[in-house]
Image (cartoon, rainbow, N blue to C red; front, side, top):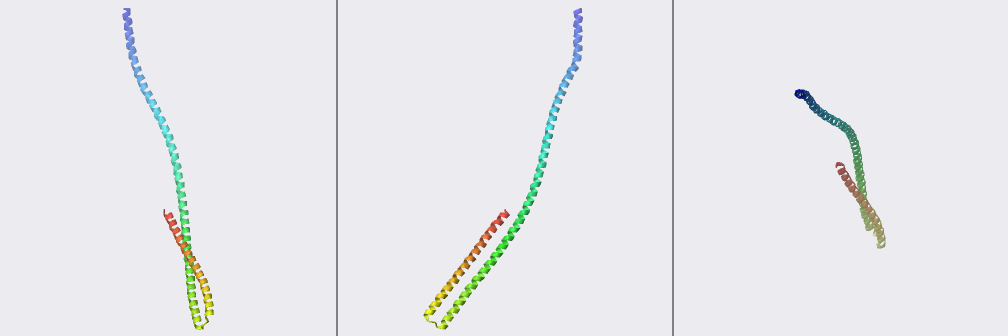
Length: 188
């Protein structure tokens, strides 16, 4: 009987223990679940902290880029203003050079035409004088020699003036070519 009683007591104790252990096991599983949630929340918290730090870095970078953009924009405006000033000055210089070149060419052409006209008049006058004067052939020969020398001198002067005129025209053409290239460069 005592063994039976002990066995019953033991059975009752086991049942009692099972009744009391069941909520503990339930609490343990809930504690494990809550612990897992807590770990998950900690990981998420760390991720959010890192994201906040990264966002802060990005904001600082964005502010720096905005400042650089503003600085570059101001530099661009300054460079455009200088470009416009230089272009206006350059164009003014080109127009002034062209005007002076044209005036110089015109003066050279007038001088050349005047010399040619005077040479023709002097030759015609001299021929008339020689014909009217009935000079002897030797003196006519000497005068013709002197006239030839003077005409040669005047011809050399005319050739020099024509070279200067040609050089001035070539300079003007070169200047116009440079101007055209510079304008193309400015447009590009």
